[in-house]
Structure formats: structure tokens, C-alpha cells
Image 1 (cartoon, rainbow, N blue to C red):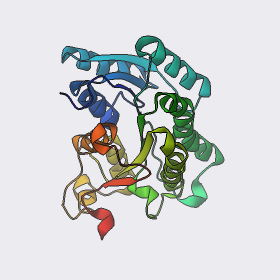
Image 2: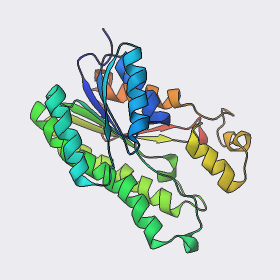
Image 3: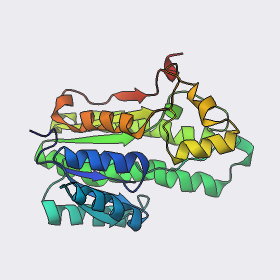
Amino acid sequence: MARLEGKVAIITGGGTGIGKTTAIRFAKEGAKVIVTDINLDSASQTVVEIKEAGGEAIAIAHDVSREEQWQQVVAATLEQYEKVDILFNNAGIYIIKPLAEITVEEWNRLMAINVTGVFLGMKHVMPLMAKQQGGSVINASSIAGLFGAPGHILYGASKGAVRIMTKDAAMEYAAHGVRVNSIHPGYIDTNMVSYASETTKHSKAELAQAAPTGRLGTVEDVANMVLFLASDESSHVTGAEFVIDGGATAR
């Protein structure tokens, strides 16, 4: 049997990168996937690829920072599938900037997406999972939420918040059978790493050397971890953080 057979999953930021790869992988493993993204065209393309491979999915335009849009996503999911088993809070943005140059507007925008978006997802999905007496939430943090780095006070603050919010939610909902874990990718070969390379003036090859493995992570590396946490194979795992960084934080 497929590892997610019969399960219903919401994936935010599912139009590109880690979110897209995870959505396609979930569908191959038997899940019905709600792919949300602020760019509906991108989400729709993910759904096209899922359906071409024989899977089932729907696309929804979604600004994760807006509560009414979360309500719409959950309502549409329940109307279509009557339950939610998995939530992957993946959507996020990345800003590298010196502390003194960060504007309040930039701070508020990034926090609204990276932190409030995760909060709203948990707020509107986890009570449903509790009624079902089961569910898995995976929140995308980062190794930037585990240690400090120049230019990362804004992004790091958001990812540190996600790390602790995950643990708090896990404790609150453990008795209801709802698991909550965070993932902490290092440099993964996505548009975000291209941005980091351009901003820091370090090539991708140089960034890859941050990991003892000597390579950038792939979106498949992350999707594999998310799949494990979404599946029943991780049924006794909650409130934990999973690092996918090729050993960078072990140094």
C-alpha cells in the first residue's frame, strides 16, 4: 500500500520548489493534495503534473498571511474531501539584510508570511484534526532558526519562532493524536539559494561547502523527510526538529 493512501493533505507554497516536489510525491504515495500558492498559475501547474501522473489534487490561490483565505482553503478542503490529515506549512519568503537596513515594512511582511501564516494554518487545521483524533502537521523552519548568521536577523527570527511554536502546539495537541514537527533545511538547491548566492556574492559551489557532504541539498531530500513525518511511520514523533543540511550544523 502507498504510504499516504486515503489521506488528505494541504501544502502551502506548493507551486514551486520544495512545496511542488512534496505535493507530487504525496500524490504518488496515495494522498489527495490541496496545493495552495499565492500564484494560482504555479499551483495549477503542480496539479496538472499530479493528474498527469494519475494522482488527485486541487489548486487554490492562497495568501497565507490572511485569515479569511485560510478559512476558505479549509472550507474547500472539507467540501471536497471531508477531512484534513496532513498540513505542510511550507510557504515562506527569504530576506538577507543587515540589521540597521531592515525596514519595519519588511519586518512586518516577512513575519506575516513566515510566522503568522504558520500560526493561522495550525489554528484552522489542528482543531479539525483533534476532532478526528489524528493528524500530522509539518512546519518549515530552517537551520537559520537554530543558529545565528550575519544578515539573518529577520529571517532567523521568523524561523526561530516557527521552531518554538511547533513545540508549543505539539504539547497542546498531543493528547488529541495530532503530531507537530518542524523541518530545518540548510542550503537546498532552489530559488532561495540562488537569491542567497546573488546577495552574499558566494557561488552555489561555495555555499555547498557549508555542508560536510560538500553538496547542496535537493528538493527531493526535503520531500523525503516531509513524507516520513506525514506518514504513520512517524506515529510516535512529535514536538521534534529535523535537520536536512548535510551536517552543516554539526560543525
